Length: 325
Image (cartoon, rainbow, N blue to C red; front, side):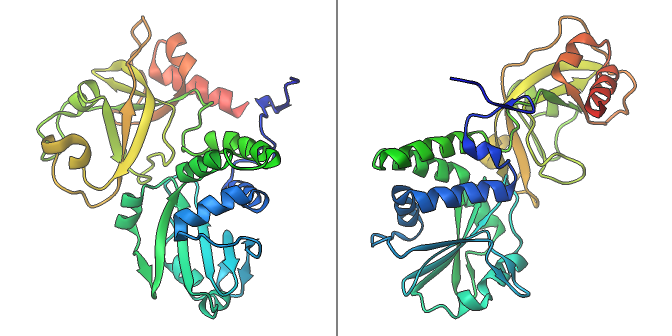
């Protein structure tokens, strides 16, 4: 089959032509739901256990009301249900003020539908969302749905859909599969961090043991210049040199470290942390010193530069030069 490239990026699904921003993903899912009754049926069964007819169901994107803003997706069946889906890429969540605006929309508030619900679509697990948002706002329930759920529903729908539905859903799944985690899978950037010799306060293991023994690393989620999107690769430096590079195999966002580290960690924390699961360590054969980097500074380096530079600071500088070309 002929290969299609867009700015050196291979296009394998028509949905990729839209892009990868939140609205692009939302429009793609809405189109899939509108064109594939098997997909819509499974989604409604999961959200509200709907078993009825779908003929008169209406799906709206970017519905606007003065002073209440836009909705991402609304799914309605007059007299039966009215759902508002707020879609977020990654682990970002809407604030309560935004959800309150949805609840107060005239079309939603005055709807005669028996069932009304706000659904937050993101990378978040149901447990994490429940710890961050209320389950009910003004008697309207707030539920969680993950992009992984959408991917799974689309995959299942292919088994019962028509040939046309199967083709569309295969393309949608290929598109979602590259986006449903926050990691940029085609990125070779390495996030290089410094690790001290001590232990996190109240812990029985050291920072370095967390990396070397537990194959984990964590940091505050999204604050103080920390990345919100997990890198493909993370590297650790201490004792004046690069120690190891790891592929990030997975991640989760937690508010209780005991769920990951057990009794070796302290009790529940006050802010969300992202915990990375680290792959097998690897490193250049030659020693790579830290170079001209502040003691606790965190830098980005392209993977190959760490193998061709004598210092991390040189790798950083070369990376920055490439990115500005």
